[in-house]
Length: 152
Image (cartoon, rainbow, N blue to C red):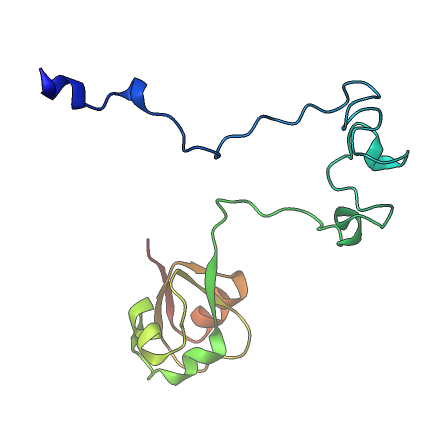
């Protein structure tokens, strides 16, 4: 029988003495401690019901101060790491240039799909494998006697 008396149940729990206080009831008549203005002082914006979010006391708010960003970026856009045709001059004539070889040579540092752009000149015949080619890059590579292969 003594075991049941010493057992702690949820309905026995209560907060520590002094840890809970009654909420202060404000605005309950002129005679009360927090009556009339209810601790808000006299007039002014803070004495009234609410201050709108973002209000900075008449100062130009942050959302107006920062410049407006033009346009938008698609969240699912395809981003390429670019390599120009003139950088392909580093490879021997007749060799195959793959994405892995471009990374080994340090021409492509970031991860992702590689796109070859047409800036500069190419004097060697190369077989270039990349994820995408610009029109001018394709023309310059094929004009030098090389081929362009799109890899997935």
